[in-house]
Amino acid sequence: MDPRFPTGKFEFDKDGAAARRPDCIAAISSFPGELKASMAGARLDQPYRDGGWTARQVVHHLADSHMNAFIRFRLALTEDKPTIKPYNEAEWAKLADMRLDPRVSIQILDGLHQRWHTMLLAMKERDFIREAIHPDNGPRSLDWFLQLYAWHGRHHIGHIRLTAAA
Image 1 (tube, rainbow, N blue to C red):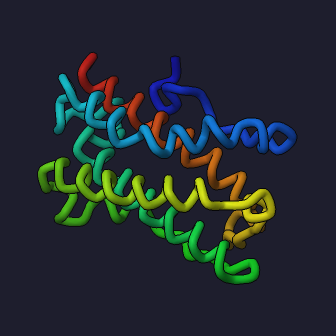
Image 2 (cartoon, helix red, strand yellow; image 1 turned 90 degrees about the horizontal axis):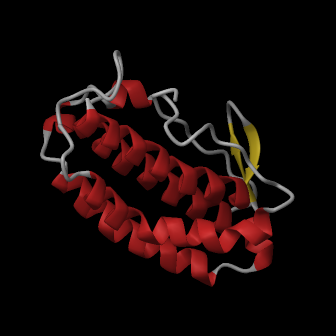
């Protein structure tokens, strides 16, 4: 197993997107609880691999990333093909707030995922094909973002679990 991708690499299933939506939406809903469970036994200041982030940094990154994802969904739902702003996650991981207790970011994720889940359940079929433009990756549908972030949460939970095994 490659510790960079403990759950495998992300692959968008365009043809099966509609069929995968319920599972992806459920993953968004259940993520905070799964994250909390993964923290049992995690060594917070242990990198999950040589040169990798610590479990603490991973949790704070998840809050950063999922806040950005939620905003991207909202932009795509309310604007016509908005251009979204990328961010330098490696530099964000060096900021002082990354040293805080991870429970701070878990609290953010609890509320954020509740709102995100509610928004996802209210979306119509046509909403999932709406797009946002990523400057580096081009147009991406909300189906793509949904699958990406369902994967992203579990991907990083895998990293946190690796710190307990280290």
